[in-house]
Length: 169
Image (cartoon, rainbow, N blue to C red; front, side, top):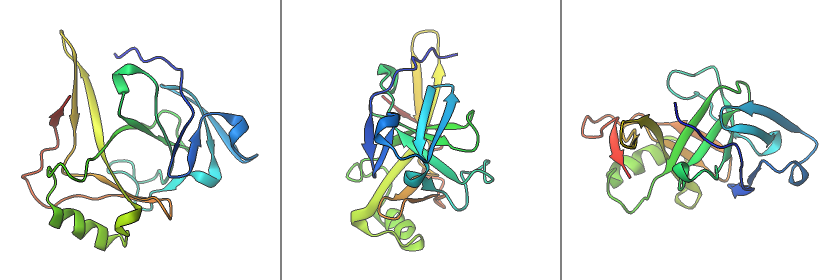
């Protein structure tokens, strides 16, 4: 089991600030999660109309940046309905070429996301090995976020060339 500290920095992504309560409205949800206590402004949540694969009943999330060094460069997608449901996400570099432009464009068209409003995140898994923590991302099912409308979809790419356990640093 990974030992993750529970302290956070206030962060702002797509207009979502967590977890400083004084910076959010009266419509705050407080959740005790495995990553610590999170306070989420319900007016700034991201809606996932179809849910995340395997968790289709959960459709509303807050997005945060943890401060623990193991998760530097990652974000947390926290369900507001289930405190025990948190996904670790790695922001995808659109210039990396790991996902072909035609596949990115197809997903953007399907979900009607304008290029200037696009954020792509990769669901990340951490595994403790005897010598280190191994991080892998799912390239086959990225999360596409429309930052303007605060909507997201986990889009399954129809190609086996995208590994579901792609090793990352």
